[in-house]
Amino acid sequence: MEQLSFMTEDQARAVRREFGTPVFVYDRRTLERRAREALAFPNAFGLTVRYAMKALPTAAVLRIFSGMGLHIDASSGFEADRAMLAGIAPDHIQVTAQELPENLEALIARGVRFNACSLHQLEVYGRLFPGTEISVRINPGLGSGHSNRTNVGGPSASFGIWHEHREEILSLAAKHALRLSGMHSHIGSGTDPEIWLHCAQLSLGIAERLPEVRRLSLGGGFKVARMAVERSADLQEIGRRIRPEFEAFAQKTGRALHLEIEPGTYLTANAGALVCSVIDVVDTGKDGYTFIKVNSGMTEIARPSMYGAQHPIIVVPDRPEPRGQGHYLVVGHCCESGDILTPEPGNPEGLLQRLLTEARIGDIVVIEGAGAYCASMASKNYNSFPECAEVLLEPDGTLALIRRRQTLQQIVQNEIM
Ligand SMILES: *Cc1c(COP(=O)(O)O)cnc(C)c1O
Image (tube, rainbow, N blue to C red; front, side, top):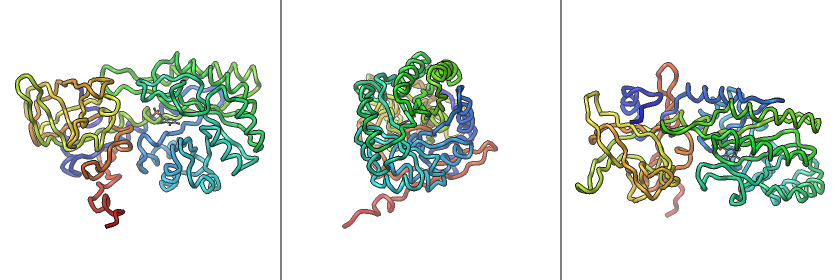
């Protein structure tokens, strides 16, 4: 059975008493430890860590990371504005987006950096800002995602400029007198140092033929183990493998490349837990299943129903008492058969029972590994459930509300009768 990671059972009960459920709890200590690990990524000629804020964009979290020296990767113009609203300096924000921000001119005028992800984006940027610096996102022809849906490199991914289009990149840069000083390749979530090394080698090979590049981002995608049986990326090992490649590149080309990494998952995944309540326990007969229904689900965590992602699930009895165990499926509160928290690993259409503490109506259920791509990526407001609150657990045990629960009024406020 999986265990609570940063809260005690009593703390989970205190969270529910104070804030109700469902509620996300983020652990400052874990956020800071992860940020320190990323900042210690081995490098040859300097490092910038950009937090990929789409993983968890709440202002309090952006401020924690920014206060430790991390910069921001924004995946839309709105995210860049949101980071600035949280007080992040514009020149610490870089936009790497599928959709060109409508307010691109205003963002760049404020000092936000831009990473062109297609030839079209490069052309538009060049027309608006001739004679300036630019970074380009390259698809180096390889990906290493944990599933096809998280693979963001290789021929089946639309992200970045395909590596064979170098001539077009150079001629667009020349046409608009752009200084192509940055190159970026983000190929997806992985743990294998061999794949990271291979990607770094491929990227350096491309950078070699883009002679103005001084800054190389290898993106994010450092996978973390949420379940006890999974493996996490070892940043020290990956960095140690990559560093000599940057040194050899400098020897060969005379260019000391500044390294950037852009972790999202790595920084936040295991720093968050969702605390919810058991609202029902039902079964489908002796050849069927027993289901725990919680007052949450795809409205807060869509990863299981999207990817068959596995999250640790812990039943915390309403009050401390001895309990047996049972095999359960855990489902959410939406009228939707896909609202399931216990899919088969990697198969959102399959089901896999979990051995859990015996659950009763009124108990607490804690879903761990919920810091990345949960609050930010859920099916918000489906079945008209309001977005839930977020709380920060401080190292001294105090709990601070960092986002209030949405109200029904806020859900309907833009509707016109
Ligand atoms: C999403 C994203 C990341 C972060 O990916 P993780 O898997 O969360 O580390 C980094 N860079 C870019 C461009 C992204 O889109």
